[in-house]
Image (cartoon, rainbow over all chains, first blue to last red):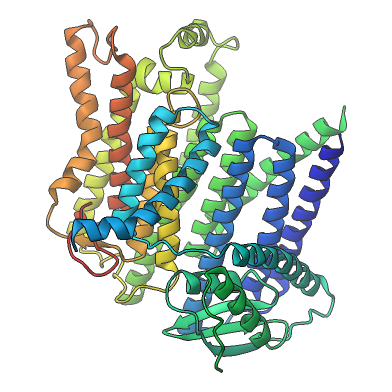
Length: 95
Length: 166
Length: 329
């Protein structure tokens, strides 16, 4: 029962990070600041959700799967953020 | 390149990839189907070395521990920081862009550095041209943070501590 | 009603509204790019919907093919359309297409009414077929009922689907040759930083996950289509990173890869007449190995066809990361 509460707490907090990241995406003024909001909030948000689900699953394969999901997602997120930021920098466009 | 030289160069990387892929197979197939998974892993390792050759880089165990601890604590802090700024009614952003000369050698160390910058508090990697790294900060000057991160990455790979030039 | 049920229905209602809203946005969006992005998000939401309906097979296919590969193809087309729009005086949107726009409404209405009528005409209890299919699937040599349907009960559909895929590629090639469209992706001169690292990390993961889906297809969600789409996505990434060089000479390996699926499947259809009265019947012995072989060939063909569709060139050559020539596919 206690593990269920841990899962609920972690997933809820993780979702709150996603919500804050989305608010940042909408409110921040330009591409670079928006990328800040996306990469950081998603990293922590997804990490907490995966952690919560790992506790819920409790089996080794399940934990491995969730771990792979988190690592692959944040690596893809940080590289694509870098490429978008770089493209924006070289294009030099406004917005 | 002779076959023997290639084998000695690729072998450590092949073992590491195979070990990680074995974990992935364990996660996906839930411990079943090794009769297919084993040969599949072998084939994938060979194809990976052909398609995207990588060189194994020894990690420093203590450095790895410190890097992971640093990464997790800073990730949490970075998430809270950006969430606070996004939800704050006045939207406090201290935008500053800096160009920093990277002293870490080209290769995995630099990849880890650039990949990590955007996940840590207040910093976003924007460009990397030769040795010149452009960093965008929303929490004031990103210089100090990058300096600390570069030291952690140097520790991770057991490299001598690289000083930073501006 | 318990709270969990209430939450689940609330989620489903949100999903339905979201799907309708996204579909509306994709159709009425102000720009091509925006519409394509909305369509891709729609595909992802659709995948979630299939998962909610208890169809992981469809969810996987929708996410990989519907949102992923189709999205990449549309973005590609969008880019080509924009570059054409810039070079031509006449914008693409206002070009007379010969078919009046208002026709879309009655046509789609008629199609909708027709579909609704068809759905209504299906007997409520489903008739004898579903029950017979379920019974046959229970004793089938493949443990995944979806794969039993795709490769045994309705193998002819799968065979024709492969033909459609090949035809799509041939059609795209003919169109590209006739209209002399611009080269879709200029290969970048020097590699972008970080991209080789991402490729090095993603290559083994996608290859093994693709092989896992292929292997899992016989007893769990997965199969040639999902596996092929994953491998195709890897190929698209290699193309975007400039690691594939499009060539105009037809390559033997490329041609083999795109035809091996349909070819092997058709060969099996002909050979099966040796041991059965109807084509595409499985033999008593070795049916499992045969299915694996056909599925493997299908996976290769699907992956290669999707990549070539994306690139729009006759064949591809691998460029070594250190500028060594050679390689295959």
